[in-house]
Image (cartoon, rainbow, N blue to C red):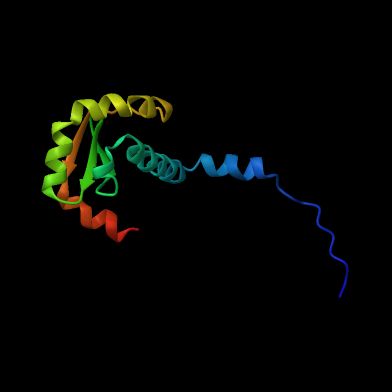
Length: 113
């Protein structure tokens, strides 16, 4: 077997840079960050019972909830959650004005895991 000489390596910065120009990859990274940030602001009893699902026009974030009770309890704390989540939105350069808590979306987020 002959000797193989490798000369055309692409640097990791170039690979990552080209990936970050892809809007689908940027969206996936943002969603992953949102999920981890979301769990960090929630009260302990609601962790793993709700997850960010998507965005509606006007900066409304849809939150999938395990059941209507969780959705109701989170709705009652919406203003506090928005204030706690605001620094994370700024970090991700997102404009979020409201949450919509939706238990019907829960089956979709649990199926994708």
